[in-house]
Length: 279
Ligand code: AMP
Picture 1 (cartoon, rainbow, N blue to C red):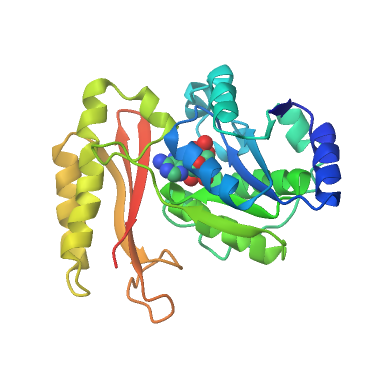
Picture 2 (cartoon, rainbow, N blue to C red):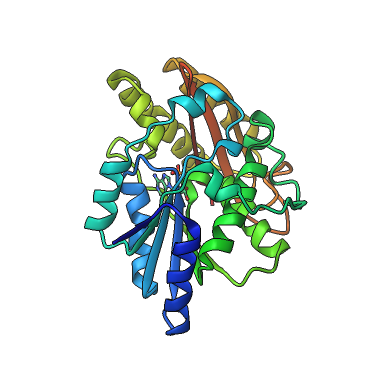
């Protein structure tokens, strides 16, 4: 496995391989890798000759400096995991290498960037769009892999690819969960053992919505889900059922025909997000 801190050298190596006709699959990460990240690697491995990852805790997507400082960083261990699981190239830059040649763009993310996570974390998705566009430019992948754990992020990346007519096939990979149902997340490292056990209620509340979903009972389900999560001691940011494409209400919308429940909760100051397609 080749590890590059400089994108120039990375791009040159990858260009050579592309010229030889090799296909490139790419999955960006912020490190503190777990099995969820490795499921992206596994998917990329199935369909591509070369698998590239990146590990970069992107400052422009953090609207809370404390969250950025406390974000777990486990680079050495991450590189061992990636190598063991068959990754070919890893880009581990510092901020200046990622942003040095940036030409500022006007992103049109269709409004899916402004609700939910976007409303609670102003500027977050613009930071995501900026970094993903720069990484795509450097790696020039044929396919890119993102986790449905970050459902709204998947919609934002789709808009980014559409806006710039990028020739990249997007793959959205199902959320990997602990046995308890808790979605795997780097931020889980910041939970106490007790919080981690209690956080299983988030998935239970989502499942409660899926199992009882009817077009005429969504408001009641949202209320029940909030009660379940708050009873377990978490502070609610949002729990909402919306249309799976617009991420807005009305949730019943002839265009997509699917509804998704999305939630963000705080365990002390650790923010956890999760979601589930309901039908
Ligand atoms: P992050 O390092 O949190 O930015 O995540 C990097 C990529 O891994 C994103 O596309 C995430 O959606 C994905 N990911 C994170 N957690 C999971 C999970 N539990 N299951 C599947 N994909 C995940």
